[in-house]
Image 1: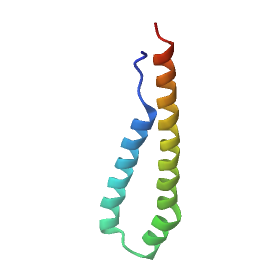
Image 2: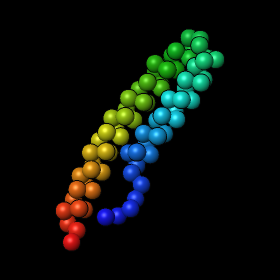
Image 3: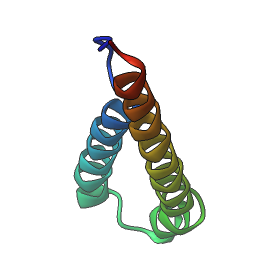
Image 4: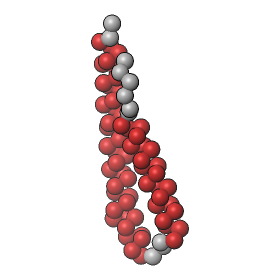
Length: 72
C-alpha cells in the first residue's frame, strides 16, 4: 500500500487550527462586526469545509480499499 498523507486528516487539523485562532480572536473582538464576520463568513466556510472533507474522506477510503483489493 502506498504511503501518503491523507488530505482529509490534514484538512481536519487545519480546521481545528482555524477554530482555535477564531476562539482566541473572539476573546478580544466582540462587536457587531465580529458577529457578522462569524455568521456571514466563518460559519459557512467551516460548514462547507467539513462537508468537503467528509466527501474527501469517503473518496480516500474507497481508493484505499480499491488499492488493497488490487494488491498481490
